[in-house]
Image (tube, rainbow, N blue to C red):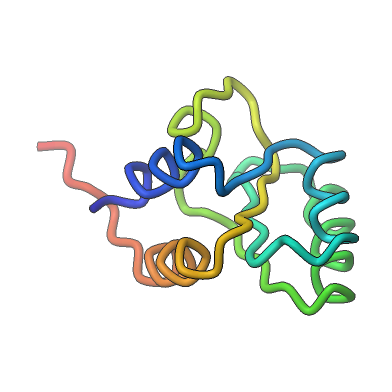
Length: 103
């Protein structure tokens, strides 16, 4: 399954939170297993949530594709995955992402 499909599946399963406040809350509560940034997220947002994730011992990655559309959000800078298996799968897909051919 492509990264976009996995993001959508995770969202439909209720295993993701989106936006600054829900992600911050998930990190503070220890429920975030992976923080994912949109490739167009602002530098300040990435810096702030990377630090919060590090303090929460939670990995964070910048997605190679926009993260909003697959989860039904127009503009989305940051999201957190709250399920361990989804987090592992998504982290692997982000690290090994190969762009789809447009042909």
